[in-house]
Length: 284
Image 1 (tube, rainbow, N blue to C red):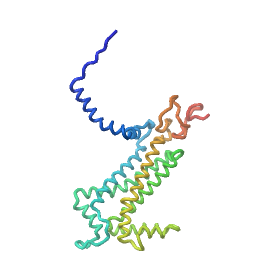
Image 2 (tube, rainbow, N blue to C red; image 1 turned 45 degrees about the vertical axis):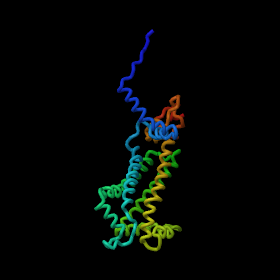
Image 3 (cartoon, one colour; image 1 turned 135 degrees about the horizontal axis):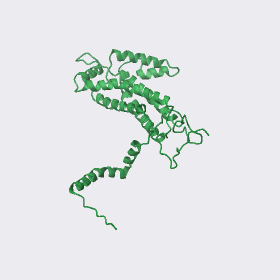
Image 4 (spheres, helix red, strand yellow; image 1 turned 60 degrees about the vertical axis):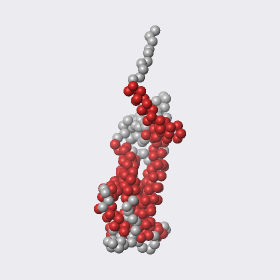
């Protein structure tokens, strides 16, 4: 009979264990009282089909673009003044003068404004590409219809965000583009005239319009987008990652003990095109 002896840990191993304990203590403390760490692990570590490709990352790219827009928008809001009054020192509108100040005088202001300006177009383009991928892959079908509707609402909210932000520089281009956009909304049946008056804040575009657009651009619409994105991500985690149409694997779901998919074919994955009779996905 062989006796096994455990050697004493070295000083370096003891220091490493103490360091790991010190690092993990706040994490363990937070997990024991909130369960957030386990929830984050469940959110990040998911089974996905082995044959996914880069097209599956368009949603994450759109989310990254939105985060960039949020961060740069907060920085710009620290220096922007939503006022249509004329600055007596320069004879220019205060809003336009604050934009010039951000671009020309604030440190790295030109970069932050450029990222926010062009990032708006990138955000919209990525959302269109993501929705196109979802449509081509059939990811809008049962049981993901609600997630598709939420995605459409996110797209509409993002376009409204771009529309309300276009007026904020308060120059000739922004003014007349907003005139066209508001007049187009005013042609809608029944609610069109009321909607146009609400957007203008009166009968004509002026300082009230700028303040109203700024409040919607900074508070109302971003709050709605954040709530919709949270619900969108929850449904993605709940229903799993959508398999490509050619995939034979379950769509991000744990396999059952007998190796068969836990739900019928077509519920959370595409039905295989070359299924064999009597097997999962095959004709019976």
